[in-house]
Length: 164
View 1 (tube, rainbow, N blue to C red):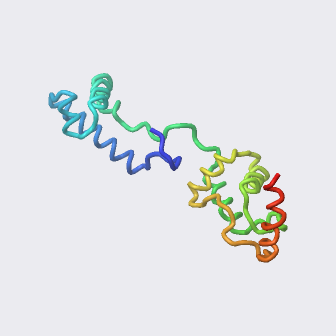
View 2 (cartoon, helix red, strand yellow):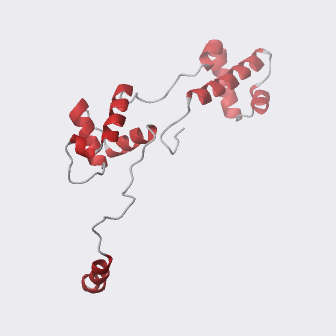
View 3 (cartoon, rainbow, N blue to C red):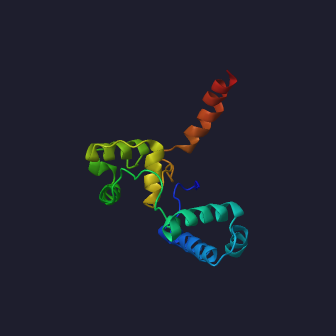
């Protein structure tokens, strides 16, 4: 099952689902049929039949959680802690002096320089989200912004460009 936040089940949720499967195994051992077990543990009949087949073939061990699915991330926990510290230091500490914004391209380059691993933007966004960070635009407008100049530009220059 895919989750919109890119996460999946936590260890606690996996353990809870495993307890439900073991509860179902006990019911199978007591002689209940899969449709009865499905109603009792509030799962679909399809799951109950699949669990029953697995239980018959391998006992309770066949119903154990297999752990996390998918390929393990190349971003090691130690790298994540280093990245968190590096992001706290700011872009200037790592050579970007023109402004103080962390862009996805800069973060990707920072990780590539340090660990010789390049992550795609979706991968990087997922990693940052897992670290409790997010990729977003600047919150404030530029300090140099001149509202009168912007108003004149919109009225004259933009009107000409849009007219084409």
